[in-house]
Image (cartoon, rainbow, N blue to C red):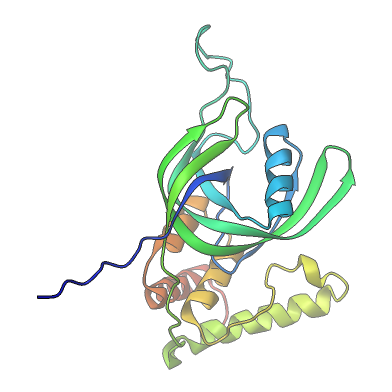
Length: 226
């Protein structure tokens, strides 16, 4: 009689978390302006070590830590921050220090993760134990969704022609994966003027083909020509 060893679950402990009012998708390109004390040291340490941090979407609260005028005298003086339990690892690709107390970074989305536990440290930084999701499979774009992909290509071409000297600031960055349902869906989701809650729901979908189908339906409802 033989027994199979179950696959190991990849996990990270005490991962620094950055709650934002937006969603970072795997493969995404996100610029961030860092000025809060709780994040300046964290970002510097992550960049120096080449380590990721986690981006999670806020469900309640503000990106900037604020005092709560209605807080009880003996309680936490700051406004409550609540975030969704699914996020994306972010790797810092570029970092600049234009002036003291300010960091400008560009980060790229890596794997999705699920927060299994989290805590807020005394100076306000959130850390969490997380379980990493497996890498999403590459699903070729079917013929009936090719127009959705082609429209994204045309949009990128228009942006490149309009801003030829600002390629690094474009929301779509190489490597381009035009025949991958998940990649195309993620890039559209980042660009759509949709609520963060909807974008988060799209990000958490495990089936990349279904995600692209939903994006295609959204484009139809918005009247986007394809």
